[in-house]
Length: 315
Image (tube, rainbow, N blue to C red; front, top):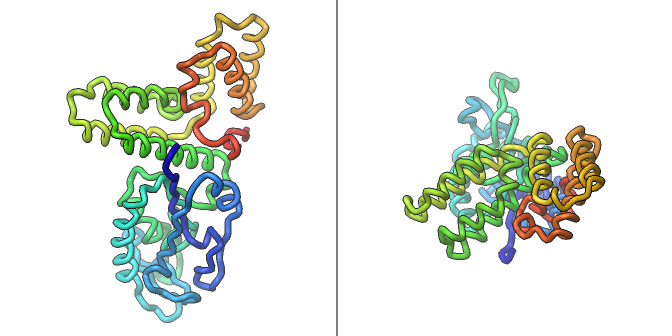
């Protein structure tokens, strides 16, 4: 990849002291591990819309579908100030070509999920922070996540895989795409899409097959929508097992009975959740290299993100 992979992020997660109490919520995994491979674009909606540090704590109140942002003690309504900022900021972020966004959980401005919304003195329902909601509306295909949820290995793998997949797509678009180039891109992500959504892959294939019937910009727009929505569906153990068996089929004639048995056993152990995905993939990559399977070597599925992130090492 030749261009920077950019992820938007709540500034406090990088260690910036911008929270209402003057503190931060530095996340070492994000800065020290993921940060080796991405460029972060920090955003603090509350500070950037003109609020000081420190500042009075705020919360969401009223209708969860259209909440008001209120200071807790002085009861000042900050909603219009924040919404005006959000409208400006999302337009500004268009120029960043983000591949994802990581929000601070629970924040009335930046929380993405289950942010408490109060009415009558108590929390009645949950919603999204005003800025997070604005980003989700403005960038409907952008991978979004909260830092708290990224401690879950499955959620972390899915989010980061989508981030790197979006970067590959943006690089493809930046290279003066053609229908022929789209066919190559589509071929390279076949197994990856099969692990996430075989249905999406079939729809993408049908779209590419009819590619000459559509103006190229419309074709690319519709393909991108299927691509990102398909990747948002999690790669399950069952779907991964099907892909592993599919890969094995490319060189089963070259394998000895003993090698076949070993490979089937390892894939079975993965299916039964006894070993992580990296185990059968390592063995398959060994055979792909030995038998010089050019088609498989081009498959993104084999290395959709840096191995150093160890995203496929969990059971």
